[in-house]
Amino acid sequence: MLERLDFSGLTLNHMARVAKAAWNSTVRAAALAIAKDRADARATAGRPCWKGPTMPMLFFDCTTAPNPRRVRMIIAEKRLEIETRELSIANGEQLSPDFLAINPRGTLPVLVTEAGQALSETVAIASYLEDLHPEPSLMGQGAEEKAAVLNWNAVIEQQGGQAIFDAFRNSHPAMKGRAIPGPADYAQIPDLAERSRQRVNAFFELLEARLQQSPFIATNRFTLADISCFVMVEFARVIKMRIPQGNPATLAWYEHICERPSASV
Ligand SMILES: N[C@@H](CCC(=O)N[C@@H](CS)C(=O)NCC(=O)O)C(=O)O
Image (cartoon, rainbow, N blue to C red; front, side, top):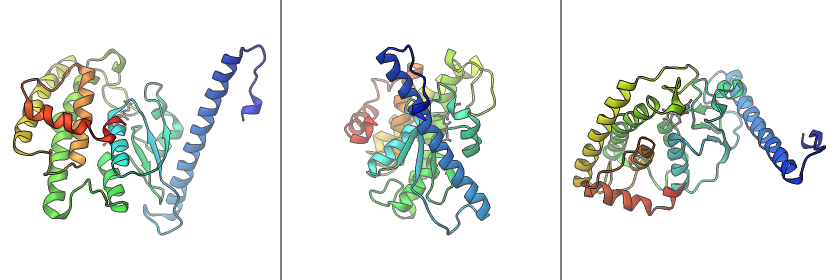
């Protein structure tokens, strides 16, 4: 592929840039082809989890986006090595026909499992990885803890993440016409952005009340709910909202999570 590039008349620097871009798109195309082959094989097998041959997992990431970051943190906490392909949401790569063939919702993260399923929900990815690699546990152990993690993770997603995303997507100029992720374009609603900012304030109070009672979000140890909360709270910078200085329990929790190696992925 690279041999066919035309370098005539280019400076060395320019040549390097052209070669790098060609290499990246070749690698990306190969990754998409692998994932699509697996999806086709799964369709032929006629069921989502057939007992046929398995392949290494493949993770589609976007380093600028919060939900893929949750998956990167899970992978880091579990110290896994998973083949990863970066897509650029800024360049609309999640909406390419090749990627939509893998995830018709056009969202990231996606984890293609060993049997070829494309998982597009962070909680499903977390559950899958937890099952294959139970230690360290991020989804809780035993009925009470597992339920607490799922319960608090949903509270964080709905009361925090959704409010932050709505505030951002309905106000930021880069999100014009892109108020909802996915292939369909939706107009921004400025009033929704404003209401969502109020909800983010309420979320910070909810968090403070919870963390006054508990060292971590869901249980007395670090779990998926802390990962989700940490990522959402950090993402709130895009709407210029931060943990209020008057919320000491949340600030202490935040500092504590920042010390984990996974916080820097
Ligand atoms: N429910 C999904 C949400 C996935 C999602 O909305 N991802 C965003 C990035 S954080 C996306 O793909 N956006 C694409 C777009 O804006 O077009 C999850 O649990 O991860």
